[in-house]
Image (spheres, rainbow, N blue to C red):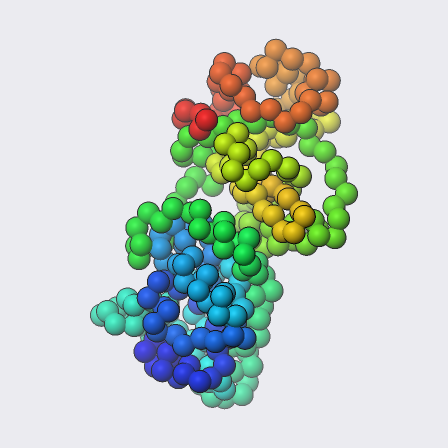
Length: 300
């Protein structure tokens, strides 16, 4: 990493590097127009492996930044030289006794391939903007510089206090602005291995409203013939568009409308026509039992 950082002085930088910690600000000399793709997953930020503060600093310098959900590569193109190795952008990789390795090449074909790979990672990522940085600032850092736990949570179920919401799934015609926001959400919330997918719901509540949907709330989507359990991910705003994102898994639980209506002492018709509602006890407890959700307290 020391060689890469020295080589970058005064040269154009393009990189797809999994983790960039706080110390990277003093290591890699970047400038406006340089392009960097990092692992911007919640786990990477929460562990401190990727620093939200660093990314904001680079963003304000005019660096083009992209947040990838599953990136683990370390590929750099510095001027006309390509580096492919194991080191992240961190003080640990730069100064500690961590054993790293890298291949350095000036062969045109290798440099072109490395640049194309970086561009592919950027195209598959979400562009870092003010909204993304605001979201990253809300992620609590549990142990700065600590290890990144790969998929530490159960693939679908929450492991901390959560609310349960019930609401009808509605077909919405998105504007161009909302469509762009949905596509950005797809890139951000892509689920590796094809075990899940994302969905979108229109939202209008204030981002500071304590009664709003937040991760890791569970949502029961009322569909024409059944009810599907999904996990809320986060809300995004861009310009006048506001949208919530949720995740479904192939293994997620589904129940009939009749079963859910009985648990809520309601009717299928009322469920299909109702508004979005957060469940209080004992309704929450009845749904928790019906959908076999973890025995954790409500968030609110």
